Image 1 (spheres, chains in turn green, orange):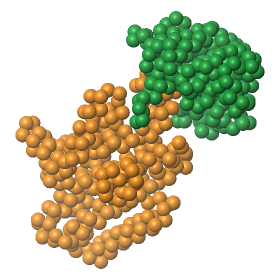
Image 2: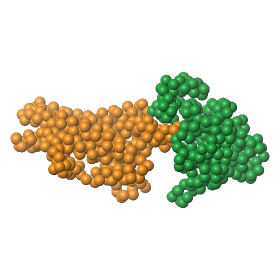
Image 3: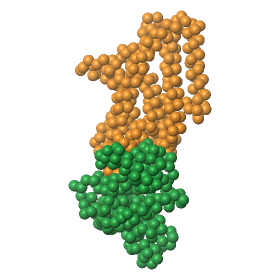
Image 4: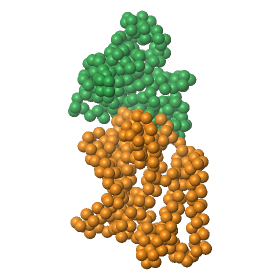
Length: 246
Length: 285
C-alpha cells in the first residue's frame, strides 16, 4: 500500500480567456490505507488535482510524492508510478473493441509482460470479485453503466495497484446502478486500499472515508472527518455547499 | 460519443477535403459550405434518393452496354474486348496504390497527432505540398524527373505517385479518425501504464480502422478513376487501350463511349459495395 503526498501543488491552464488557475498551492496527504474523499463545486479543481497524481496532467509547480518518490522529478519514470496507481474515470473509458476480459488482461500482458493464461486467470478472479464473471466475453457497450464501471475497477485492479484514484465514479450512472459500484468500492476500502476519490456520494464518505476535503476555487478550504464535516463544518463556504447538496 | 456519430465526423472531415467553401472561415464558423465531393455518391438503403439514382444509372449503363454489344457487334464487341484488356492494369495500379496510400497515410496521420512539433511539421508540409500539385503533374514529374536519375518502370512510377498523392489525403482521414476517438481512451490506456505507442497500437488504431473504413472505400473509388491518368506513362490501362484503338481505327466517339461505360460500371459497383460495408458497420455498432 502507499502514501500519497501532494505538496504545494499548482496547476494553470492556458485558455483563450487567459490563464486559469485550476489548483492553487494546495497540499494534501493520503496515508497508507487511508480513504480520502474530495468534495466541492464543479470547477473547483478536484479532478485536476487527482489527475496530477498519476501525471495525466503535468503540475505547473509543486511536488507529488508516492511512497516518497517524487513524481514531478524529471528522473522519475511516470509510467512506473502509473502501474502502481490505478484510476477509475467518470465515463468508464473501457475499450469498446475488446471483450471485458481483454480489457482487463491487456495492461498486465503488455506492461507487466504477464503470460496470457496467468492474466486471464487473474482477470476472471477480478471479475468474480466485482460480480461479473459471466460477462467475460461480451463487449463493454453491451453492459449497463454500473457493470461497465465495475469492469473498469477490475481493470485498474489487474495492475495490482498500491493506491486507487476515483474521478467521480458514479456521476455518470443512473441512480439504481450507483449502489453496485459503491459496494465494490466499499469492499476495496475495507481491504485497506489507499484511495483518493472525487465524489459526491455522502453515504460512501460517511461509511468509508477517513478524511473529507472540501475544495473550492482551486484551494482546500477545510479538511476533517466525515462526521465533523457533515455535521459541524467550520467554514461558511463548506456549510453553504453542503446545504446545497445534502 | 457513439460510433455512428464518429463516422459522421469522419465523413464531414473527408468531405471538407473536397469542399469548395464560399469564404475561408465558413467551415469553422457557420457551416455554410457547399459540399462538392469529387467522389461518387455512396448509395445506401437509408438514402432513397441516392439509391434510386444509383440504380437508374447502373442499370442504364448495363442495358446500354448490352444493347451495343448485341445489336451493334461491329465495332462495339471489338472495342469492349480491346478496352477490357486494360482492366487488369487499372486494377493492379489501383490496388497496389491504395495499399501504399494506406501505409503512408497511417504514418502521416500518426505524425500529425504526434507530440513532437517537427514531426507535425514534416507531415503538414507533405500534405500541403501534395494537395497543392495536380496529380497529373506529379505523375509526369516523378516519371521523368526520377527517371532521369534511375530507370523507373511505368508501373512502379504510377504506383509510387498515386500512393504518395493519395497518402496525403489518407493521412488526413487517419488523423480525423484518430481524433474522433474519445480522449478518455488514450487517458485510460496511459493511466494503466501503457506507453503512448502501445496505446496507439492496441487501443486507438484498432478503433480508428473501423471508423475510417468507409472513407478508405471512397478513396479507393477515386483512385480507380484517377488511375486513368497513368495512361500518360505508357501504361496500358483501360483508357490507353481505348486510345490505342482509336489511333488504329479512328472510331473516337464509339471507343470513348465504351471506355466511359466501363469506368462507370466499375465505379458504380464499387460504390454500392462501399455502401454495403457502411451498412454492415452500422449494424454491428
